[in-house]
Length: 123
Image (cartoon, rainbow, N blue to C red; front, top):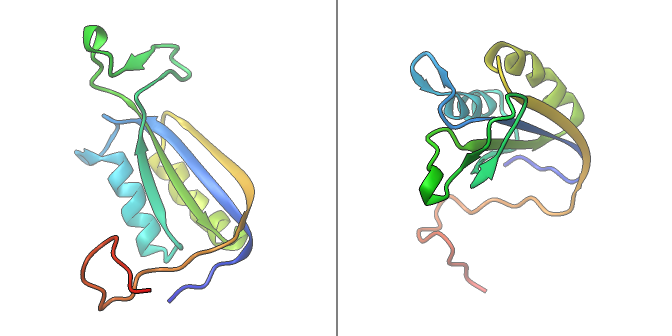
């Protein structure tokens, strides 16, 4: 099990939900590659509204339903591991925003592999 505490680096990638890599969602490719690289974890968050460099507003509001909502992929690991992963993001992200933030990991604990029900823990 990976241990991660103390100083870390967070990379956040802002792209569009419809961005693709070889006919598959780009966010999925980024998560897959982060997993292959052995990074501590990656999460994808779908936005309800936003705009970027194109200045086009994308929203989930009914009257202006967008098919290309903003997506943020967040990855946290040690600085060395995150920086080693950045060249892959250069290859994958043609349009969007990639930012780095220093952060501090307070707790990083995974679920035991034999634990059956998600969200349920023995106390």
